[in-house]
Length: 123
Image 1 (cartoon, rainbow, N blue to C red):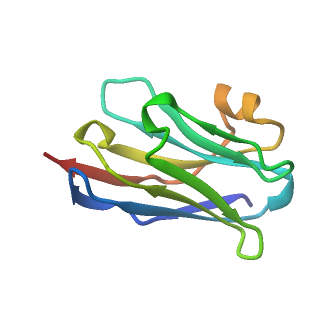
Image 2: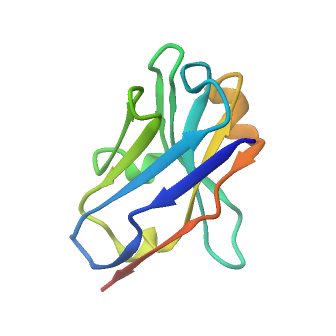
């Protein structure tokens, strides 16, 4: 059974930092793209960042480039999203997601989703 368990969300002031973690199990970690989507009620879900554990390629959505850093620890089957200089517009539920094929496939809609963790940035 595929499981993606997020942790690390919370409330932070603008300019602050949070680190999200995603512990993955139930599939071959090294063969998957793992990344983060976020969603605000009433808006489309948005692919924030993804990393391919096959070749190390990385995607960042434009608004988070230079502020967010994604990394993968294959020994722990865990992916991290370090979020710095957070802004109120980063407020959303962040979901850890996984896709077997490529960053492109992942971006179009990954089949595996975690339960989500709330990130709230106050101004």
